[in-house]
Length: 264
Image (cartoon, rainbow, N blue to C red; front, top):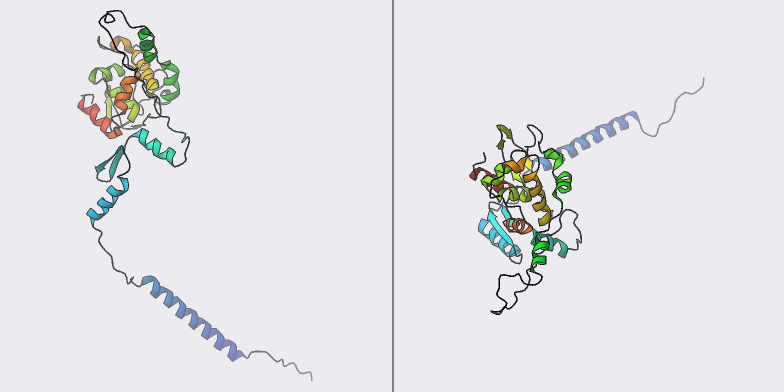
């Protein structure tokens, strides 16, 4: 009869033993990992001294001019100084802001009694005219503001407030407020003609002073608004915007000014 028996490298008992040992070893490894994952760290927590942190913060920003620590984790820095710091770090054009043109004041000229007449000095009329020159506000409004407030100035109900019939109210309440709203934005619930709006108007500090003045003058005189303006209305100038820009308000502060002016 043929011999059907075969020789194996490992016996059946050896295979069973190896499986048992491997399973036991895997269990030991899993238990070790579980122990490491749930064990408490040996280090100790140290409560930081708040005064020390504040002193280090003050030292870190001591060299930054135009910086103001408002407390509660808030700070304020002049936008022009901020852009200077960005430029110092190699960013030539950040793509979202361009500084407002500096206002050049003509040097004072010596006068003599003979020259002190009611007639304007030579070239004075030309300087005054160029200083008051503003771009066309309508295309600036269309490209900057019409997406929300619409080309008709009627806004979008429950989303963006109208400017038609409302802008003169803003001017009459506080002449600086419209400049603040455009420059710094507004954050907070407002009420316009018995409709509540609770969105956020973004800041437009990237616009030039003359551009903001031109937009405001267009808004104040478009859509029949000119008939509702007070008799003492004065068109905005770039100098008006420059003066407000220096206030560097937050959007919530602009909203507080709106409430203080009695607009809500």
